[in-house]
Image 1 (cartoon, rainbow, N blue to C red):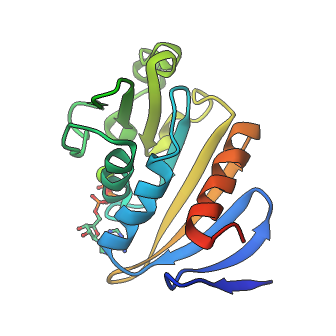
Image 2: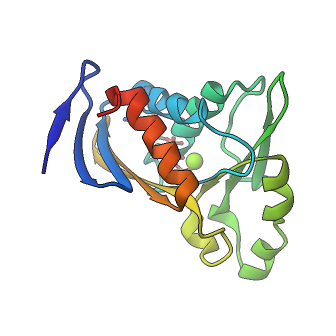
Length: 176
Ligand SMILES: Nc1ncnc2c1ncn2[C@@H]1O[C@H](COP(=O)(O)OP(=O)(O)OP(=O)(O)O)[C@@H](O)[C@H]1O
Ligand SMILES: [Mg+2]
């Protein structure tokens, strides 16, 4: 396993070409990592965020929406299921929290195709929607390690997401 240590103190073990993994040491750092991904997002992108309660999924989405350029504030959509964020030069982010979805029929009322035609889709608790989410996606795992310490793993499924991962590598590690 190769470890690369950059100026920004991230360390990244290279696992395989579809995966990157690193640590966040604070909510602010998690937001900054989100911003890097957000700046690369376009309509049709699917980002899944898996992690326990309080792992930092919504914190990550706050950075992501900011990096993408939203004019709206980001909050946890736990009670409304889907939030929508806009930006001045067009496009949408749909922020879905599947935690409270009770059943697959309820989830099937979500029209992913319609959302993806106009925007990017970010899903918290994606494991609750298993089988409904398009197979091509970026799957992110957030794991609690300690107080402010989180492990993040990004897994690309499909060509578009390999490209996104390359973009993140470039932006975080200078292309390493
Ligand atoms: N490195 C870190 N990254 C992200 N959040 C952190 C970190 N360290 C501490 N925290 C704290 O952990 C909490 C994460 O809350 P957040 O709402 O983002 O989690 P979540 O995964 O969306 O939870 P839920 O499943 O309840 O929606 C926040 O209070 C945040 O300040
Ligand atoms: Mg949340």
